[in-house]
Image (cartoon, rainbow, N blue to C red; front, side):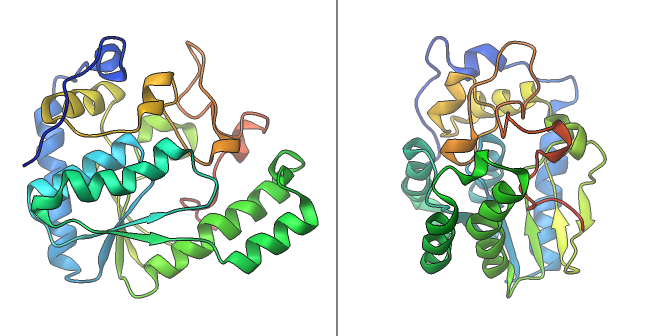
Length: 249
């Protein structure tokens, strides 16, 4: 049975639940695109979930409409406990839909070698070292997730950052795979309205002013007026704030 606890006072739901005028049309378009992805790539499409609130909505729609789309995530070894716990939450919450989360972890020997050479705080030393860390913990595991797939699905939204403003709902990645971004048009208010109406489980760190959540060392809360990704790699230049998962080379 789909559902969950009601919103607590002071939660992200209470703060941000403000649907746009065309909210219903956006939900309908998102479902249509997910159905198209499943139809066009039978048995070869995966949702690559970051376990952020947008991706939790995509997962909810996949479960709610019983779509034959696999669910995969990257357990980088540096996630907050609240984030990692969502893997089990998904499988429990959507047990009736039979959802299983494929978990991809970095290669242990690569992590040991990197940390041994550069230390556990290498990401703060330079952009190159931070991106190298992302490469080991995210890009290589993602490559394994997508190895036998012809398409993947994200929870990206244009509103998230300037770097994502030009993204489309359908794209082709650098390997020639179809990439679907079904929530590209959603606003932050739309996101939390859907969560509220459908009781979607989400990361409690969102209630602590973290709209974008990655690895623990690279995520902090944002202040009023800062953009959505200001809490990611906050010590770097704005133009560098991508890990490489969604950057065309």
